[in-house]
Length: 130
Image 1: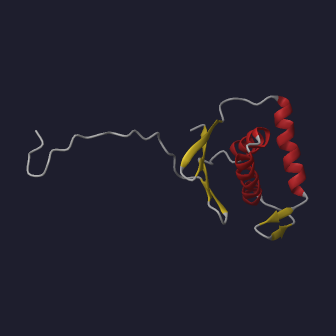
Image 2: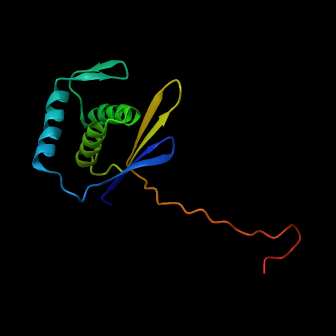
Image 3: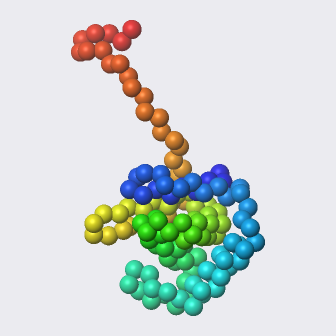
């Protein structure tokens, strides 16, 4: 599956299609992001000097959450592209935001299909369904 989905508080926000290629300038920007992260960063209050791919993904997902809150389209695009292209098996980014904190879950093993609401005319009690 080529799609990666981003949810905020259970609501679909973005569907990123990996099948669409990025222009060379945007790919260069993703490489620059990697280069800058190589020098380390702080993640959940801990200094990470030599981040692995998952730590980088968590860091970028944090930027994605901030970009969504701040409606920063350029950072949303860059963060989504980085996550989708660097983690080919990533299916979903689930962001939960409340007044106190933001939590992020990177999901590699499930996809969410569009759900359809179906109204059923249920008979009243005691009447058969025919």
